[in-house]
Length: 112
Image (cartoon, rainbow, N blue to C red; front, side):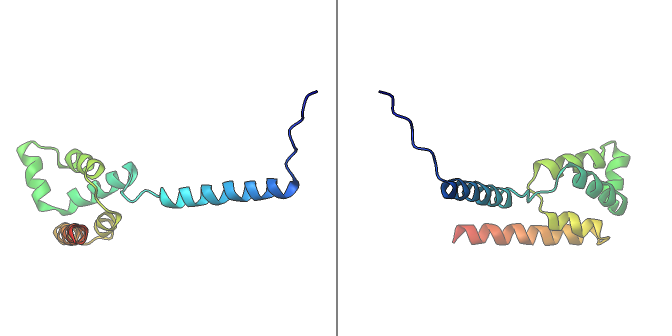
């Protein structure tokens, strides 16, 4: 004689669906990208190079400051505040100094 598996009740299905939805929302909230993405890095580099005199001097020497900065933005854990600072029209050196302060502060917090 074959035994049939008990059929789940409607309340169990609703509970399981709610659990799956809650897990998905928590996963999505936890996976928000904190670093700037490719489009943001390109916009950031464009503004930065236009405003930064050091970048202009590097371009005269033969280096491509735009490509270097896009690559650095994508590979270094820049934060969105740095990108927003530059896109907002602030002086690049001020944005970079504020970024370095934040990085140093986070480093100190982790070491304690």
